[in-house]
Length: 93
Image (cartoon, rainbow, N blue to C red; front, side):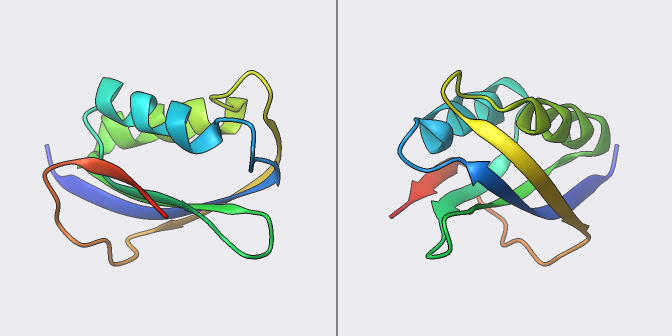
């Protein structure tokens, strides 16, 4: 399968609730490489690279809010956006 990329921006109650930590665990589950970071506006940005079907499953899980305390309002997906190749998925501070 072909590798696809996406930048995913998530708004809502997604900072200070373990969202990045649980996103990292989802990334390992779906074999995603990339990063997750908090943005100054209170949203979270995820840069993801994976096989197409794994990326779709990952995005679906993100929409559900991977952290029990999180409340996802909107998920903006920019498929094909440039995401650097990495071997891991990391939280960026």
